[in-house]
Amino acid sequence: MLGFKYLAWLNGLGLLLVMCCALGVISTDFSPDWLRLPLLAFSCGILFCGLSLLWAYLAQTSLLNQAMSGYARRTHWVPLTCTIVAFCLSLVAFLIGCWLIVYLAGVSYQSSDSDAPTANDEVAPYSQSSRTEFFRHDPDARAVLFLPR
Image (tube, rainbow, N blue to C red; front, side):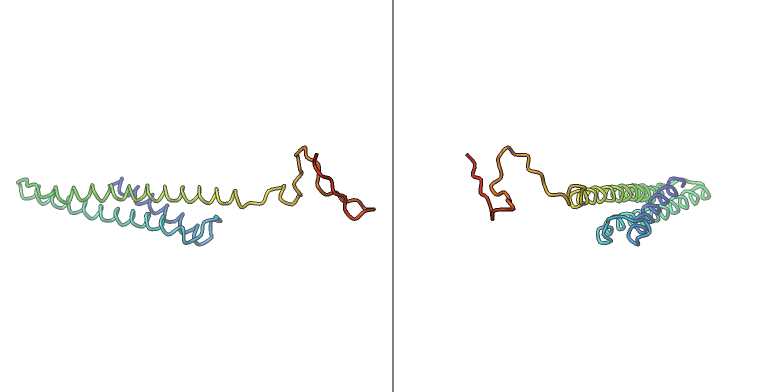
């Protein structure tokens, strides 16, 4: 039962992180629209964790009834299998939510690098070619034209 509680806490903390990013409590470059998928993944993780707790209760009740009646049957296998499947789906949902958050952070980081102004944006580019300039400003003349040789 302790594993269910830890998995529910992990999904809940992931859900809290996504909600804080969407509401602006944690400042990020994520658009709230992009946070829908991780929100859905962590919410599904909590849902599957709750279902696994429900099926675990049914499996334990079945085993207790078998112990009190004095003979063993195999009726507990169905809720036990559903418990394991729901727990694994909850774990997969948590991993998908984490992967989506990391993917969004990578996309946001790459897009902010290409759009971010650098220190050299305000300075005119310096020509490092060996060619002479075509036009050169001469204060006494209107314009002097230099043609390459």
